[in-house]
Image (cartoon, rainbow, N blue to C red; front, top):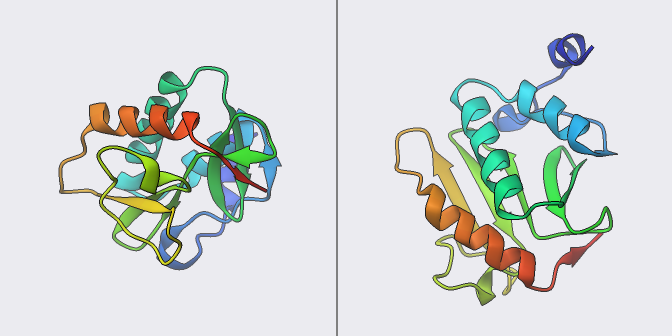
Length: 140
């Protein structure tokens, strides 16, 4: 069933999959399966690191992006396909050490842009995810 749904998924601007809002790992799997090209393998890697770093978290899709939180009413990390990279968002990232490199117009938000041909440090990423899970989450 997921395979049929994956074929029907529309890719939005930048190749981001259009996935209906929903809660649970199944809906995140639909998103991951629909990610184009190299982004699918990296999306699965991001999901695996997040899931391993914070056991028991809640996975959901909102606004065509996977979100991870302690409940289905909050989140501490998410990501989104852009044209040439995957943008990872930390809503309380400005409180993390070291700071994730990407800045935002919102003072507490920090980003990590993951490119196909640039190094991805899963150890640093896991540390940021663990830190983010202990900081005040963003509410839906």
